[in-house]
Amino acid sequence: MKVLMVSWEYPPVVIGGLGRHVHQLAKALAAEGHDVVVVSRRPSGTDPSTHPTTEAFSEGVRVIAAAQDPHEFDFGRDMMAWTLAMGHAMIRAGLRLHGEDWQPDVVHAHDWLVAHPAVALAEFFDVPMVSTMHATEAGRHSGWVSGQISRQVHAVESWLARESDSLITCSASMADEITELFGPGLVEISVIRNGIDSTRWPFARRRRHAGPPELLYVGRLEYEKGIHEAIAALPRIRRSHPGTTLTIAGDGTQRDWLVEVARKHRVLRAVRFVGQVGHDELLHLLHRADAAVLPSHYEPFGIAALEAAAAGTPLVTSSAGGLGEAVLSGQTGISCPPRDVAALATAVRTVLDDPDAAQRRAVAARQRLTSDFDWGTVAVETAQVYLAAKRREREPQPRRPIVEHALPDRSN
View (cartoon, rainbow, N blue to C red):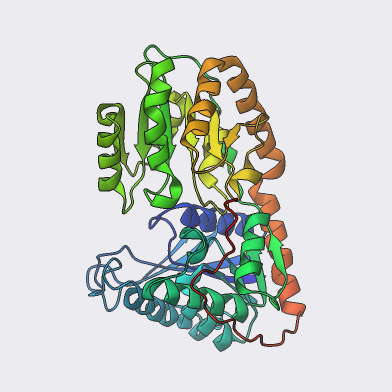
């Protein structure tokens, strides 16, 4: 099949797990013999004169990176205007394919930020649109949709879901969330897990290094990731395991606040912020860590957990969303309820108290990856969704009104 993917991040522009997902999926589809074109963007803060639209053929995938034109919008200050400008640039880039007589069989949209270009290109080429919903605005804000920007994002997500001919989520919990938010009457939702290329994450058996235990968080620095609770748990962990440190790898809007949280809990010297790291440095951090700690409040899947498992790092995660499906507590890692600092500290101590048991769980986690999270399997299942979308006729669905509290309170 000829597949046109639309994503706001694709290497070298990678913000988080979405970019890595789209990259690996595109490669795997190409390896299965499909003709894959990805329309993405040039880096933020660039202008079309220094960073014009480019085309490259990499790893079996044709990648079109649209220039930021006009480039005067700033994502932080003008998010919706920035998104619409990006979408316009992507549409112009995608329309070039028509002049080459390249006709896609399906358009695949990844998240709400590319809703406008994906819908426009699918309508122009008169082909089905499949959308992967990687997260939702309501989920990111604990079920609440309030404020102008959040309501706008929620509205675009709803529109994208209802314009789609098929929907994909990476976990059953995410499928339930989409149905709760935007149903009834949605098209079929297929649950297809994220994959992992284990060859890029060589497994290292734990060899206890000299010195105190080292914990590692990897991911975006945002409130819903629960990093502040890992910091709050650190004093409790250090009482039984003196000198324990926490390395935080990633960037995000909450970095300065997290520094203040560490200062408040008097562990600032035990917390190290290393920012965004490359693959080799991340692998080094994973191989050195005694545990990867991922205490998310909200996690549609948790690709960082797969990467840690592939590298052989013992896992301590919350049971939120897709993490509860990706990690089998007691078998492939240790899980605890989200937002529970005491339970998180206990889970970490469980790993540190018994390194041999932690190693057995790490081995089981790695073995599970090869059977349940193979990118070749993900590509085959995704292509099946494409075929089903081509054969399906869909009735337009009415939109649901936006409500201030978009998800039921499941805290009790």
